[in-house]
Amino acid sequence: MLVGIVGKPNVGKSTFFSAATLKSVPIADYPFTTIAPNVGMGYLRTKCVHEEMGVTDNPRNSVCRDGARLIPVKLVDVAGLVAGASEGRGRGNQFLDELRQADALIHVVDASGGTDEEGRKVEVGSHDPVEDVKMIEKELDLWILGIVKKDWEKQARLVEQMRSSIAAYIAQRLSGLAIDEESVDGALLHLRLKDEKPTSWTDEQMLELVRALRETNKPSLLAANKADLPGGRERVEKLKQTGRLVIPSAAEAELLLRRASEHGIIEYTPGDGTFGVKAALNPQQERALQLVKEKVLEPYGSTGVQQAIDQAYFGLLKAIVVFPVEDETKLSDKNGNVLPDAYIMPGGSTALQLAAKIHTDLAKGFLYAIDARTGMRLGGDHVLKDRDILKIVSGTRRG
Image 1 (cartoon, rainbow, N blue to C red):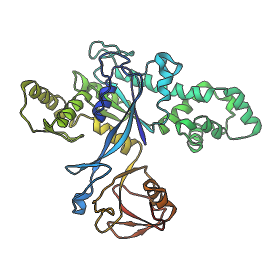
Image 2 (image 1 turned 30 degrees about the vertical axis):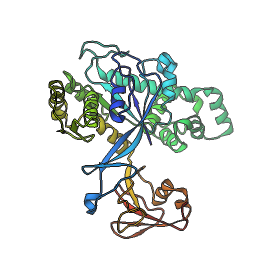
Image 3 (image 1 turned 90 degrees about the horizontal axis):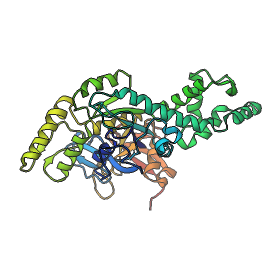
Image 4 (image 1 turned 90 degrees about the vertical axis):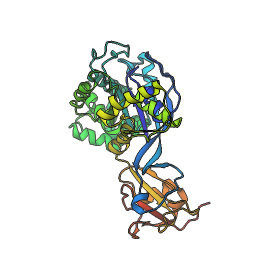
């Protein structure tokens, strides 16, 4: 699963991405700093099961810190989008194409109201971030609509003449966005277009269709960045009134905390609402950390960066985390590493699908799984639950 980071220019997307991944990317106080997409590894945070199971773990594919399991996930940050992006303005159509494989989107919004629709600096509070949300979502919809409408009249007539499935045709056009026929069929049914001739659809109906497909297949949340600036809290509340999932954020504060932690100055786990000082601070460092505490952590409980990532996976994508082991009694792999791996799986995944993700040979020879908590044998169609600990028993040897 891949999460994309979108927004207009100069809202702090690159700072958000850099804080989430600790990857150095161009960060500047003017529009269009990012041109090529930035791809990096962030972390999904979940409670580790080792305390519950009374063991000391030895993670391999992830990190366990103070009971929090941090699992690597891929993030992509694309250049800022402006009005007209779907038609190529500001190379927007190229940037939109870079979002094709994203399963969910974190939409970074300037909650300070300090940048205009083009991303230029203006007086803090003078711009309404709700308008930015509408603009970005409109450009996403027009981008998808442009893909569907290519040769539409000719193809719609052909579908009617052949009495074939319009849902299948649209899904084929949008296959690069991982939108399948079932999703299209559901949207057509919801919008009462299923029994209407495609050639009779209005532009507004087609826009409603792609909007429904975008909301279902590219779900998004709002990271209300710069929420620590004057008036930020009020604009965060206004964003929440739109009905969207909103996470108050302060990407600069998160970047400061992560870099201070990386240099051994403080002890901080991404997503925490506090930090501990480990080294002597100079006056500048002390002041900066105090401001983070007073302006961000105390009023909001966190910087919001980690929470946005967690919500994108657990909230939007309904992901679960599963801990596979080879010895269900010791909760270890063949080398004795306890709870070595944590796998992120889509909600509704089965034990057989987990086996396939671990290794294709395990799936080919799948016999059953064992629930390490209960000792029960589970079939391949067993639907996984979050924080399951499973052993896969296969008749095929790996390696």
